[in-house]
Length: 129
Image (cartoon, rainbow, N blue to C red):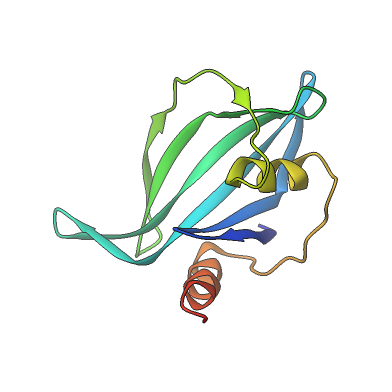
């Protein structure tokens, strides 16, 4: 994993640069979103989740393909498919920041090499003033 922090807002969002791969006329990339605090659901602590994205760099469209929750113990899943169609990338949003990495227009620093590291870094960034 080569997790690069792309944005901090409601979640800290990381792009996994190691996952970037060509996909037809676009590219695919995995991202990790981290919550500021554990989310307790049914007595289980969740720290965020993973998503696969597909970007058409020329057309500037994004398609979030799925979401897999990430438990505090590192367990992933279950995976849920996202069925919404691709959409135009809005300037400044999470998809824009992720697409910039996937399409190669920016090359941010790698902040973490594991999800556990990303959780610590992301949470620290979300609580900075």
